[in-house]
Image 1 (cartoon, rainbow, N blue to C red):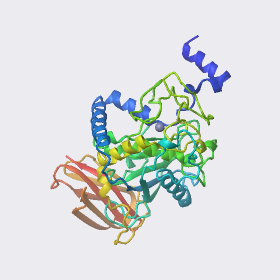
Image 2: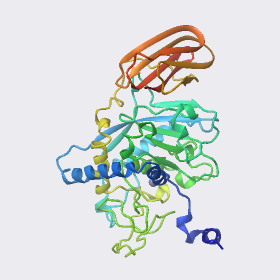
Image 3: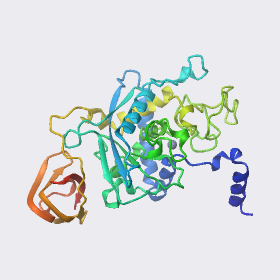
Image 4: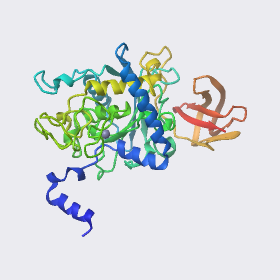
Length: 420
Ligand SMILES: [Zn+2]
């Protein structure tokens, strides 16, 4: 019998004894490993951020830490169930603000052996008040997609070309995509690590299945009852700010945080304290910190970040994600809100040399096509009364990345354009 088949049979007969075969709830680390296979330079980028992190930790005492991160939630829906309510989105933002400020009602008691390690991470979140162009926004985009369920191994949800929606400037916003995953997928979500922001900006952000987003609405549905308290996002934002799984993704692995005990492996469900006291990695009698947000336990069982994890996250905010500190995303806009409905269109070729075609598929009225630099400076604008397409002469633009905003009576949509 092949070992894998043998293990599978054991897993079927003794599901509680084979936790390593349980659901890979979070794909952040697996995606990272795949990335390294394709691009070994990713290891170097991670090492560079680690070096920065260690210097930051050594000089952290005099720093002002508190920061507010602007969030944009991209709801991608194929059916009305996937088009989650604003209340569900607000409940997720609330959960993040509680967990990252140690305001969660279920935090450890001050008599618990791990209480001395519990930290207020001093990170807050707002739904964006203004978009990258300075327009007022709800911080929520809603886009109907022809994709019924996204593959949790793909990044298709991150591009309008593949049925998704492009992220907003990832240096200034935390982008969250809320999507439908296949029913047979047990993945809850995945995040991009900050060391990849410079090399793959278009992939930066966090993806969630809607059943684990927030605490109301569809949260907990379709068999995800233990993930109904918004803690998937707390965990994934941890990754987005450079935290690793507390078991270091290995047997007795290292999460590079000094004040978390080494874990033999991940924990599931909700163990009782102490869990694995004096474990094989050399923990003390208190065992493993299974109630940490970076383990795999049920939502109602995870309750804490440590001071070491807090510093590591702030190092990411001070380093790779430093533009967040000057982002205007949380400030209200003096410019009026614009239509939120999205116009479906194709833009090609992209990258382009001299001419770009914007094809709507059907006739539109009062079309306006604007090309902006990434800093928001208008480069050109073409107006057209009616038509099913519009042409943009981009031959006068210097090489680089631009934002193309198409507006018509049907709505507004912005996409990225690369000019060679
Ligand atoms: Zn994870």
